[in-house]
Image 1 (tube, rainbow, N blue to C red):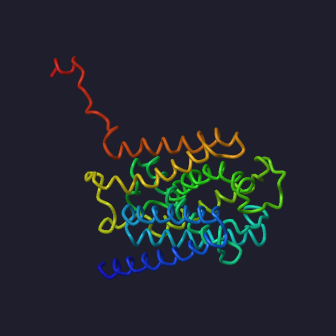
Image 2 (cartoon, rainbow, N blue to C red):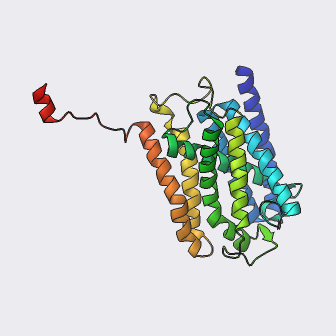
Image 3 (cartoon, rainbow, N blue to C red):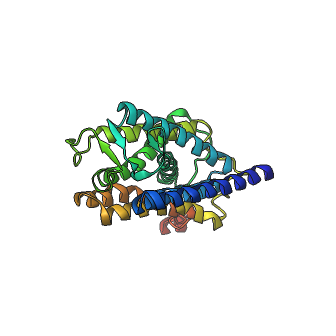
Length: 289
């Protein structure tokens, strides 16, 4: 365990140094928009990694990071190169350096969003941030579907903004049914998010309790669970305030607000705030006794 922690600390330090160099280069070469977008993606994925290491345990968090980045990058590479899953599109220079046809920050975003979907699905269904026990493949598939829906709700509002405001990528078709976007893109988001979450759950997503956060009886570990909910809330507020077109702002409020509210209620249940009160015995039964 100590060796693993030392390795994790060294890896984080190296990654931070590389990120600092990349951000400095972007600030000089690409301009403020690219710098802000890359910085935001790195901060978001870093916050989710720190939370996942505490909530899931470091090994499970690393497994989710690898699964999400691998599947996310492959799906985006196939999409940008051949038009699979999302329809034909091409990334511009707005999102910074690329690996193949895909900006480096995109797989990191898939990790962050997948982690958010994982935690929120557990809170919605189980009223707990992590799933207890291994479960059946069918149960894993159902939970993965819930998480993928949470992730895709975010994409409903962000896609038009990224395409028409920031021009982060260019779609081959601009006559789709969703503000010019094709519905195929959302099917792609559901498919990729579902594949990531299902692969993670089937690979042993339930954490080892010796390396994960304490059981619900010890409430001091609530902070890490709040991170994915706060990130999702921040993404929702951004779309509500700045979304494009204007209609997307109202859509984001309800599309993202409902799963966020449901997950928040699950968190309160896990905390014991909304726990059922002890049942009261009717007065007639007391007299009979």
